[in-house]
Length: 591
Ligand code: GTP
Ligand code: SPV
Ligand code: MN
Image (cartoon, rainbow, N blue to C red):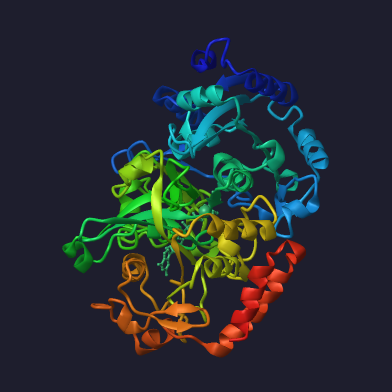
């Protein structure tokens, strides 16, 4: 393989600060070669052939999955590691109780010791990328330096990566610096550190998803949330979708659900047949991250900073998410899925009648070893392949939001949907979110925890300040989106889900759009406006009596206990918590 043939000429960039940083990193990490990535198809092909040669990737069945590959990560490197993720600010309080903290001096010292000489024998890739449409004023750029070809290939699918991004970086002169090495993939030598005030990230010892694709959670959420606070915008863990009504109007909605709680599925929703016949259609703008800021008209305008999907594989089927299945039919990287006898990717819940031959470790599948695909196995694919991908995703101005939805996995208490009274109440609902943990991060699964705005693992600063920043938008405009809370995961007495979910979530979206337009009913309760079963279109659903009763019920005693627990949680933020949020919480608790 001729590596220099792909590298840019001797003068790879006109930006001195970038060139100097790359030189410094190379001096520290000692790679055998440095490759500046241009994002071209030819470059991608060379990367893939390198990975096929060294076993990082395996080709899948070309007839059924053209241009697609399987990557098996180290079995100890299959999810984000929240306990090893740090926000390094000079003052501990600025990171807040919601983050692990280290001083920037200690953080750099610890990381630089790990990076020293770590790229010997490896190629160091320099990956310029743009988060958001390349010509968008809301977009922001970064450069990731990595020694993982897998990371480069994923970054090419997930971001606008390469020459165009480098041009913008050279024009603007500033960029987020991300330094990454897979190191030895040793969980004992693994850290993901953020230096928000320096706009920089250092990540060592993991090749997985949010730990390693630095444009995603590290830049677009932790660093960007810090930038957004200073600059008057919001960087959120939200999907963005457009709902086209039979009248031909499209309403855009953003929704924050914690990891593995349904963002990709809602973003790609296909309405039930009766809706499609009337002309309803859902457009996908983004499935994980949303950057938004008030426009001239006072509405919030949102862009998806990403260009691809890093989606959860298990549970994805032509039944549950046909758009995702169509999207991943070609040019897709699968990570930690199982394989069928004819070399097709396989996971639990894929449907059809195929069976796994090899599990995600590459062993002959034996149910005694657990699931065939890792529960956090993923697909990486360009958003352009999604049949419902909205042309508005490329709009540099973003799309105006009509509603913001919060939600989580709540097996009990929380009804299917309710509406906030106003923005401030909406911020309280977001701040009070709770959800059961999932396989997206290492650690126990199914444990209830507070996950405000689905940002617990991703907010780059103190949640107290973050809630204040959210509240501040009401000072600027009264044209903000309405705020809702949903729960697709309420369980019945037999432990099964009471709500069918997936495509039928359209029924809840319809109620929300009708509320925004002022023509849907609800009753007032202390937690907000709650529809009754007759306020939603439930035609054609065989809901049990228990479901109809439970999904639309306000349980006064249960909520009294919940509010006590919310109050205790908010108190953890002490003086940093906006007093008005705590008094609103108390006022509701007393109702
Ligand atoms: P991240 O990529 O980790 O941020 O996850 P996500 O929020 O995009 O979650 P995703 O849509 O991938 O869904 C995660 C899991 O929840 C999958 O196993 C889905 O099958 C399941 N799920 C999604 N939507 C629903 C729903 O409406 N009802 C039920 N019961 N399960 C759902
Ligand atoms: C999440 O965990 O919320 C994800 C996957 O979207 S990761 O990129 O690993 O963060
Ligand atoms: Mn996510």
